[in-house]
Length: 325
Image 1 (cartoon, rainbow, N blue to C red):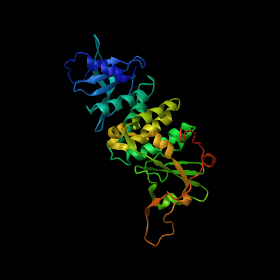
Image 2: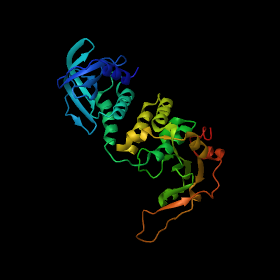
Image 3: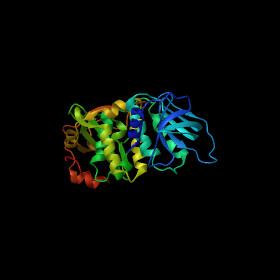
Image 4: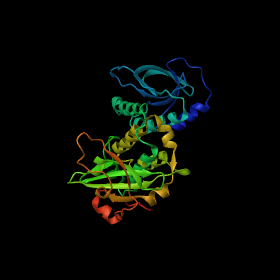
């Protein structure tokens, strides 16, 4: 059972007329003293019991999230009613998709340890929801291509560690001497846009470009399903699960709900992944004329010979075991 099931039980129950500060709630069986709740205004909430002597802090208010520390809450749970001090964390959106995302994040990062420091778990939640107020940084198709490379790796953990921690990083993957840039195409043509810097890899490094066809299909693999698959493989490494969520939220921003629901052709993506030496990419190279910077160009890779699987495994630190599977 997860928090979504507890919420569904609340939705099926007879609704009470609640005053501000009151909640219809269900206790979380696996996290003592915590509740999944519905506030008086219909907001979905999680209530975290305050510890003795816990200092009060100013509330945190974002577009889709509000956190109130040390709030006096009246809790109606089944036939029981009681009051107490809680940290109330509410999803302010009444859109079902965002509420579901809120609950999935709560399950993953909040309702896991009743003794976890409140500041830590709330900080994680606030960071993720703050990203949802920012404009998208990349298309969902590009993110799908990057996550498919992680999914294809023999070691999901090592690939996730190598994945960028900044959406605007020059390369999508970096670790040790290698740098990998993933380029997605929806046209089945290996024509991709590059910056001159991406093709100018430091002399001590190996630059690789991964080219993958990413097409939307109605019954394909959604971004949400791909993310869940990777989470399952990383369930014993919470820090990397958090990194996945942080980068997905930072990439999609306000388009998160729409992006996670997009489905793509998994088999096509697997079969189409090809790798090329960055040095072989046709394009413009430094030095450039004085005053010229931020050079970008589109390169056609269709005439290049891709690297073989064994060669790729020798060059990078996470062998790509599932390519073409």
